[in-house]
Length: 239
Picture (cartoon, one colour):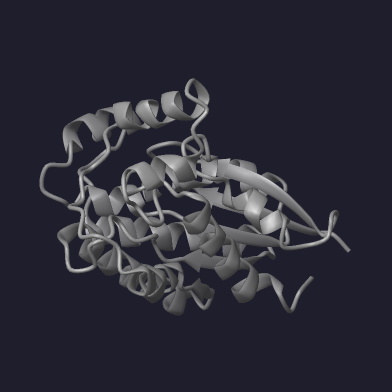
């Protein structure tokens, strides 16, 4: 029997400037076992995802995965271009931890009320690769909030952040400082990928990054961890 999965998120799920974790997830199963639907938009905050749930509930899947909050976490960092992000994504208020938790809780509540899907909330990929740096700490803080929302709403928590921390500790990467990637930086990655025919992994290697191309978007190693956490946490016993 085919399992229908809706994957909700931001640019990591849209996969224009990240390795596609949906493809990585599909490759972990025989052809036809999974039918994956992509619901991701570049730059989305939890608020934007909440506004776009109609397409998900209109055709309810068997499983829903939610990977959102990276941009909310980035907005908590000094130097993030909050005003531009608010304008670009039409946010009605400034991003905050409390608002993120409210929006994520509302996402889960609607999915539970209007679908019978099994729901999994992923914690965030690690921002940057300095685990003691402010970016990584922000992704850890928001991941703890995601765990709290999952517990409060009795849905599955998928520990992606914890799994990526393990991978980074094992790799012991060089302590490269985190630099936030504005929208034009994503264009730079796309140009390298499409015009210069550089793989996302090659871009990572040139920058000495282990899981990402730009401290945010995933290479194949990072995407494989997302697929692994979804598969082990939600699908292994189901498919």
